Length: 61
View 1 (cartoon, rainbow, N blue to C red):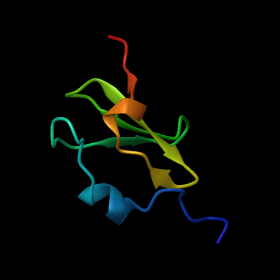
View 2: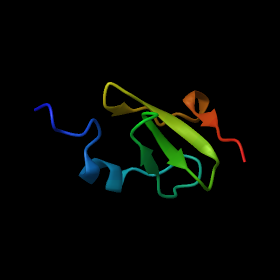
View 3: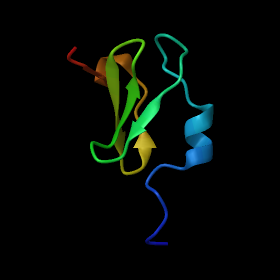
View 4: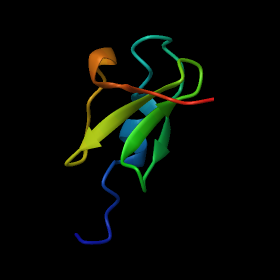
């Protein structure tokens, strides 16, 4: 369906940051999952979260 979000909200509730085990926020525009605690942004590619620390981008203060 065209109106479905790229990332399922229920799946997002289950995902945690692999570094801190804390909650993640979804930035739909940037297609990233944000860990405020770790200051990392994990990419979402084709609707699939890539939760590898080596793939994450550091967030700027």
